Image (cartoon, rainbow, N blue to C red; front, side):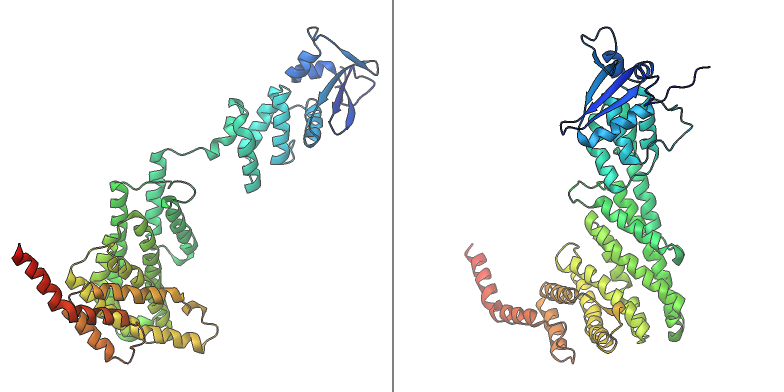
Length: 429
């Protein structure tokens, strides 16, 4: 039985493939015409009787192939692969994604269906690094239908699949799994926000009424579990509130609420959250006041973060509430914030390692502005009541309601004249 031909075997070669580049690189590779013709349409055409001219080099037929310097090694690799049995039994022929991409491009140029198929199968199956993915996106789309399977993992997903994964992720993100799964839950929450955020690309999902209804249901279940925890706290002795397990669970709910506010704001359905928070506010403050420990201060800080988002929705008209509820929110949360800020400031001042208590100064400023906004939208008599209490309070420095006080003074002074002008105008009509 004849021994298999080997590339570069000058003694049995009957054709020279002359690889050349514009930069002057010139390499002779001794090959065998039967293998070239079998594996490549390009070489089959060049070595056929139909080709008008045939060069002779070293007493052999010669086929010149010009290529870019960057593709030179890939051309050599393709010629070597002509002499390898590519039947799927050997997977380490490609030396990585980048090399396989180069071979694939040459394989298509030279009309090598076996090599192209093997490259496509390899690239479709192996993992890609980010830079490799970008290179694939740059090269593959213009190469024809035969390489399309490579892009399968990057194709847009149909809406039904997107909705399915969104709802499953949402339910997990608003559940209360064991603490060992907190990292998974945080990742789920981040991806939900990413799905509905418009950045350089359109949102992955535009929430319709069904999606919004599902989100509202999840928020409702989250608040139901939270309210059950509040009831447990209120029914037990004050010292039991400080138990580590309960505090961790309480803090977990607050973290979920803080994230949920961001998602609900993007979906423009903050009302469901605000109403639930308003209903729970008295219980939350009662529990916060029952334990002044340092550990509880950390939870109070999380409460402040959520309160800031709720009050912002109320203060700037995102969620419309009746006067009684807006007044109640000011009366319950203004004293809480007024007392909590000095406590947090004192812990930060006395403990250099108190990173868990650090809060963005802009949050305090934003919260102060929100209180002013809500206050100025209340009836003037209610404003007077709140401002009187503020002026007599030892914590007058924060929140600073000076702006609201000045506006109230102006409005009150000119009120009779303003209303008289309005009434006079009506009489004239």
